[in-house]
Every structure is written in structure tokens, then in C-alpha cells.
Length: 112
Image (cartoon, rainbow, N blue to C red; front, side, top):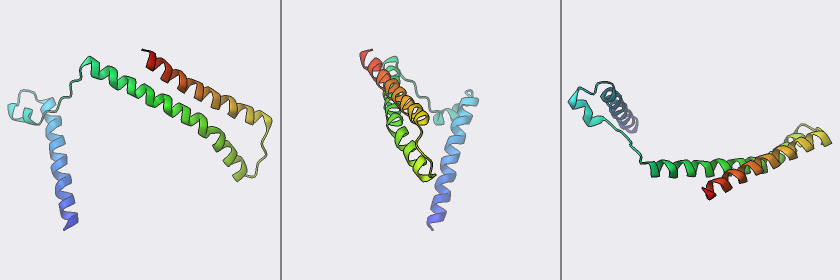
């Protein structure tokens, strides 16, 4: 029973997406325009979305900078390797670079 409902729901969803695609391809068919879905954003909404995505990208870079040394330490211990000064320096520099880029992205976004 559940499987049948799932298949029917999926078929209806696929049909709606298919009709939506056809409505854009054949704009002269008036009956297909009922299924047309257009999302028009104002300039203010585009700016807000872009600003939010820049903040998310900055947060992701900061988190990457925090996780990078932990990942290096975990992998070094898991594979029974030794911590070398060169690798530790590279990981620390990469981590600081990621954190700096993330903070810069958020800072520039907040100022504009």
C-alpha cells in the first residue's frame, strides 16, 4: 500500500515537472502556461540572497580553518606518522589563511 502511494506521488510530481518544462519550451500553448513557474526576484532580493551566501561562504571558510589542524592531527595519529615541523607549518598557515579569508568575506559583506 505504502509503496503504491509512493509511486503514484512520484509519477504526479514527475508529470508536473515535465509539464513545467514543456510550458517554457512551448509558450504558444495556452493550456501549458498553467504549469509555468517563474521566479522573478527584485534587485533587493538578489542583493539579500548574495549577501547571505557570502556570509555562509565566510562561515564555511572559518570552519574549514578550524577543522584543518584537527584533521591533520587525526590523520597523522591514525596512520602512525610523526608530526613534522614542515607539515605542521603548512597546515597552520593554511588554517590561518582560511580563517582570514572567512573573516574578510564576512567583514566586507557587513560593511557594504
